[in-house]
Length: 190
Image (tube, rainbow, N blue to C red; front, side, top):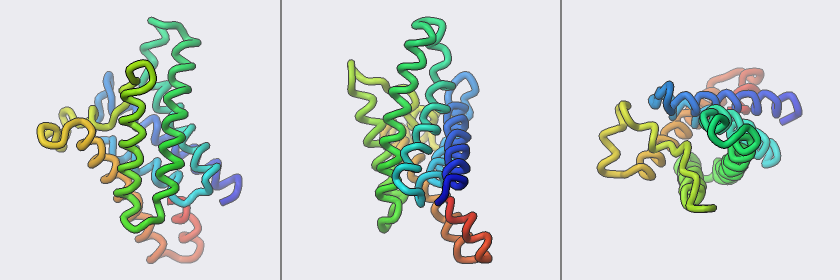
């Protein structure tokens, strides 16, 4: 993957981060959460680790800056930028983990576990945790809301992440198997 492909992946990842932010209030389009995860997968699953980290950081910055916009009024812009940046770094770490397990058998399932593991760590540490942006919170008023009593926030988030990753993986496999050589190169970004 060259610089151009890395830039395309980073832009796609930032778009995924914006989609993820739309899943939360005030928009509350939680049904888009698997789409955000699919865009993240498409950006990192076949990228070199350094590009996966950069794409994950782009996803995280777009996600957290938009998600936490309301903090700017209460804690100031410098603290808002710092907190969003720190949380974006955790997303970059998760993205490297997603990339590391993407090629394993059942890669999307392992990637879902990595995502939720980092999300859970972030929710408990440091300073009592920063649980903002947990995927399970997006389940309210969506078809998977009925899972919450059985799987909780963490389990529901795992299913949402795994579902999005699985969809993107299936699309990339389909495109690679059915496309011309030129389209196969484009599918390699998925």
